[in-house]
Image 1 (cartoon, rainbow, N blue to C red):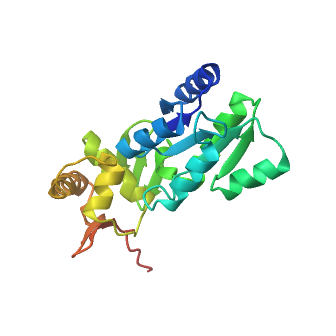
Image 2 (image 1 turned 90 degrees about the horizontal axis):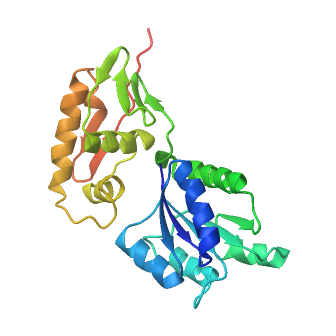
Length: 232
């Protein structure tokens, strides 16, 4: 499931998009102008923004340009949706920072498919795709974690933490980065909270002898390491 911000000022189109995205399992938030969109993004960073070109006041193109200049939103997936189908408009939309571009009218099934494709490329951890590293397997669709024949019971936060780490193996993440990506952007809780949940995660993984995969990198943060395989 992804958190998608739909920036669209036509109520009928916004409702149609929302119904289809929710049916596909996504969480949807609506904004009818660039200012509403910025307020929503400032409050919590979405996983993807579906952005109409023609908006009251500032255009979607101007908003996209500003989002690309801000380090916080520079990598935010953007899909531009517009009635402007001229080739020059498509080029301008992509040049302003959009990752993809669709013209109205559109088939909702195609729109949903394009969103899935963009999420796979830009934010794979938002999809319900099972991931496996070594014997450790996590399935978001069923909320199950296992290692071989051993079932691992995790709380919701530990599940999200492990899911994020498994989708970015070998990469070191600071406590602040983990708070943003696991707990949610702009959630104001102490960074030491991460340590508590990492401890709980390791305790749960210990039953399957996988606790050592969650490594502490002194002075930097945490990472999930791939198990070392030794050849005979």
